[in-house]
Amino acid sequence: MSEEQNEDIQYVEVLWEDGSVIKCEIYDVIDFEEKTYALLIPLGEEDEDTEVIVMEYVEDDEDNAHFQTIEDEDEFNRVCDYVKSLEEEFEDEDEEE
Image (cartoon, rainbow, N blue to C red):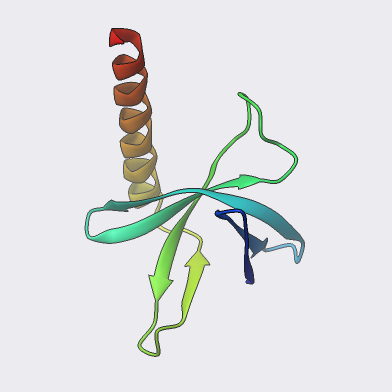
C-alpha cells in the first residue's frame, strides 16, 4: 500500500484479493471499540451512490501502518452500524440548521 498527499487529501492504493489495485481517497478515520478504521472512497466514484470501503487501520511494533480487511463479519457489521449512526446524526444536525 502506498500513500500520497495532494492538497490535504490523502490517497492510498488498496490491493484486493484478486490482485487488482484500487486507488482510494481516505474519506475519514474513526475510532471504534478501541480500534481505528478508515473509510475509503474509490477514485472516480465520488457520488451519492458510492459505496464506502471500510478497512481497519493497523500499526505494527515498528511504527509501520497499513489497512487490512475486517475478517470478522460481526465486527464489520458493528463498524458499519456505527458509521451509519454517525451519518444519521450528521443529517439530523443539518436538518436542524
